[in-house]
Image (cartoon, rainbow, N blue to C red):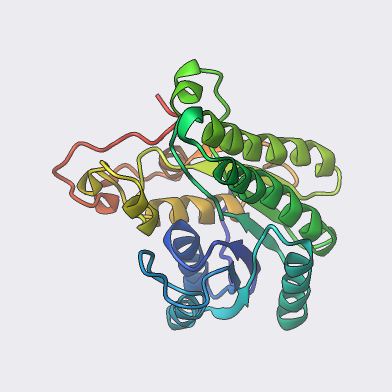
Length: 274
């Protein structure tokens, strides 16, 4: 399919203060897009780099227009207010990226209920809430898209046996997206999911011990794949689960070494994939 630029398009990206969310924002900014940075971090975090304000500065420097918004996606009032401000500032919303996510890779016996609740509230409820509240802004727009960072759904017991709580939350994000794709297909709003083939080096990896970050890829590969998806025809390109590498291969990319943290190292396959 023909690809188009995101120039002039308005994206509302959750968790865009760092990592994959920020990379998607910067890729869109290079096209000349408007980006609402919807995240909780307004002051520097002791272990995680980036705030909504530093992200906004980078977006502006990359060629886009930015709107930093302090948002806890568990709050209906905060999300609704932020989306209204985004729409008022840029004249509407064309794209929602459900990127914000909470993670804890532990078995049930050491998973505190507050962490279980957090993953369900941010990952599942947050995805549903942001999608629900963004729909009035998306319906009727030219080529409206919702992209959720969630893996293809698998019933392989090994993914549940290692960390049931997290697995349920991530697969549920995909189920929400898949369901909304069916609900809103006739309205022309695309809902798709994207997941990286390999582990991606982000600040969040600092919270997960034992990951060799030299065997990861950079967030830019996910951002480049997202740009391809978000440029496609929303009426026909919906209800799918994509892997970043596969998306780029379909556009003719054959050399992925530039995305590797260390091209000489064997890459680590991400969770939920063979």
